[in-house]
Amino acid sequence: MADYDVQADVAVIGAGAAGVAAALEAGGAGATIALVEQADTLGGTAAISGGGCCLVGTPLQDSKGIHDTPELAFEDWVKCGQGEADEQWARYYIDHSLHDLYFWAEKLGARWVELQEMEGNSVPRWHRPANNGLGLMTAFINAMKSQGKTRVLVGSTADRLLLDNGRVCGVRSVDAKTGQPTEVHSKTVVVASGGFNSNLELVLEARPELKGFRVMEGSGPGAIGLGHRLLRELGGYFTHMENISFYVYATPDYRDPEAKRGLVFRGTPGYIWVNQQGRRFHDESRNGAPSATPALLRQNPPHAWAIVDAAMTGNMQVADPYYRDGDKIRRDKVQELLDQSPYIRKADTLRELAQKIEVDVPVFLEEVEAYNKAFDAGLKREPRFGKPLGPCNKFDTPPYRAIQLFPLARKNLGGVKTDMRCRVLNAHFEPIPGLYAAGELAGMAGGHINGKAGLEGTMMGPSLFSGRVAGGWAAHEAGFGPGFIGKTAPAGW
Ligand SMILES: Cc1cc2nc3c(=O)[nH]c(=O)nc-3n(C[C@H](O)[C@H](O)[C@H](O)COP(=O)(O)OP(=O)(O)OC[C@H]3O[C@@H](n4cnc5c(N)ncnc54)[C@H](O)[C@@H]3O)c2cc1C
Image (cartoon, rainbow, N blue to C red; front, side, top):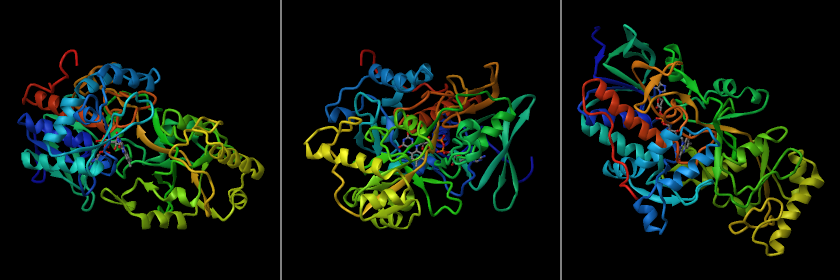
């Protein structure tokens, strides 16, 4: 072993949700860990995420009078997955979400502060932690540091898995600044390198029918599929790769010199979406991936314009660190986007706006008029698509704006197939010795825990959970602890 090499019981690649959870679990079992992270900081996509987790039967739900059960959640989950969810993993996660995620996170210093209802859920289950994903990951990273079992190598990209007689026994990583390679020698390896939605080439490889249209990158900077390559080289079996969660309400990031990245925005419930012909095509309040994404992808071309008036942008939020200060929205930055983005057009009249975005002017004006009439008639829902009008206003306050929307690749719902211990499986569904995978690389857990679409909060939650499972079993195989056991809900709950 060279001077610069590292010895550990368990090596973990990637310090996002799954990697940090794996390190915590393996460290708790008594193993030493080497955690290799390509970025200069820890946290991954998880730290810039909303941090929302789908959790079932929690004290926060109870405090709001919401009765939820694993059975109800499982039913919603499987329905949302449209026949493609891994039911065994879904059941495993749901049954453990109260004790092994909600209470576990609290014990490590995180706080669950808000509950929201998301499309496809019978009851509100999307739990937001204080300070979003950053708050959650800060608590976990601090806990990992206090545990004192993990040696962290930052700015170091894993580029090869080490093998000994067909068994994975470590990882080689390369320092981004010096090019210096380091070999981590370990008994087992957990790969938790996230998804690939910040690598357009891989997105289009998984969804070739979208080649020729504009599609935006929308995950964290490290989500470029490097871990996918490492696992493919060793024969890892990938499944459900075409299941990518695209967001509809996203516009190109004009600050990105290549304009490949997209910005997701929320807080504009009054908006309508029109296609390039000037027609509405969907109930905009149902903006989740299960229904809104297929609706957008059916348009020709598959893009749209979100139409807002001045009043509707008052609470607009942009899901990107540049537009936030922790929990607070930077209104000045949101205004900067509205004023400066070439993908946002502004006009004093609706007719002028329609001309600027080159849609069919009479069709567009008819759509807006029909929408406005529903308010004049005091309707609770507009008649075209049944959108509830409660939180909305009519279009009457210039200037009007049109924000250009393109599908944004956000989350990989497919990935490498693993067993229930997170051992990576090959094409014959046999474990590759010594090798584990968790998080988005494994379609959040097991390969495809969500299926075709997810209920929201079903990415962070399962990534953390599968990280714990992988860490527990990787430590066990290395000679530490009983493997991941966790605690399910009591019978009859
Ligand atoms: C803006 C945004 C908001 C989101 N909000 C939510 C939400 O509210 N709820 C929800 O459920 N999901 C949300 N998601 C999705 C969620 O954040 C991810 O699914 C989750 O973070 C995946 O966890 P992970 O550990 O697998 O990957 P990550 O958190 O991406 O961590 C992977 C880490 O691996 C590192 N890495 C990659 N390759 C290598 C290599 N070769 N060597 C070393 N290190 C490497 C990366 O740099 C990264 O740090 C959101 C995503 C985005 C982009």
